[in-house]
Length: 153
Image (cartoon, rainbow, N blue to C red):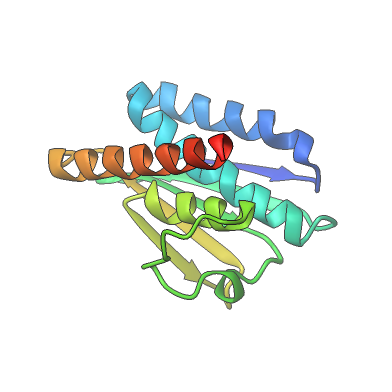
C-alpha cells in the first residue's frame, strides 16, 4: 500500500497530517504506543519545515514494507543543514532543538537523501524489540522530565 498527500504551506495542516497517519495506522493495526511515535516524528518534521520554508509545499508519502512503515517527507528544506548527525545532543534549549531531537528519537531509522530534500523515517513493526521500546520510553521520559524542569524554573 502506498499513500501520499501534498500540503500547502500552513501550520493549520497538522490535522490533515494526523488524519493521514491515523488512517495508515488503523489500516495496518498499529498499536497506540507506536502510533504516538509516528505522529510525533512526522508532525515535528513538518513544524521544522513550516518554520524554515513557510512558503513551500510539502509532500508526504507512506509506503508499507515487510518490515515496517516508511514515511518520506519531501520539501525544499535542506535537512543536511539542520541535522549534522544522528547523535544529536540532548540539549533541548530551543523549540527547533526539541523538534529535531524527536525526529531522530522516535523512528527506528532516519535517512536523508536527494541533496537533503527528502527525509525518510522508517518504523519497524515486525518483531518490535522490547529493549528498543524500553529505550524509546526512557528517552521520552527524559524529554518530558526536562520540559517539566524548564516550566518550574
